[in-house]
Length: 175
Image (tube, rainbow, N blue to C red):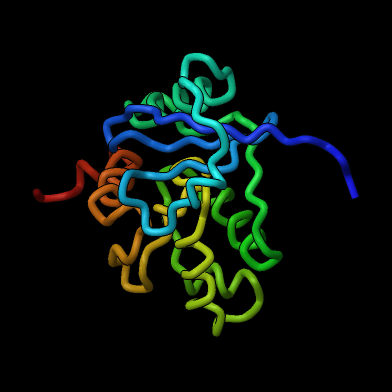
């Protein structure tokens, strides 16, 4: 067993989608949560509160999220750590591979995991993704293309998908 001391801390970063709770542990970001998030961490699991400007990792993460929300960034380059169970980690790895501007379905992820019957379990793992936006769970939609549950709220999911919508798709819409 390791005797390593971890330094968990958090800050609130103002964005166009509300003040995001960003949690870091040592050199990795371990949580990004929207206001009103369905599955927020317990206060005791967030660590010490710091100011965004006083923590290089949190500040960099917040800046990258803001750049993404402004349409100036499509990828993130901060170290992430999710610490989930084996199944959730598999799902979150697949989420990381969904290209910017594209979507997939819960069923497609279940199929990629080798069992189409796992779609509901995939949905649970997607909903418990601790790294909103940077692990793009918003890119997962229902089998019919409908917007289904999003721990940050469907309005935010709609906003994120609209932000990523390819110009040619936007141009082809009638309204």
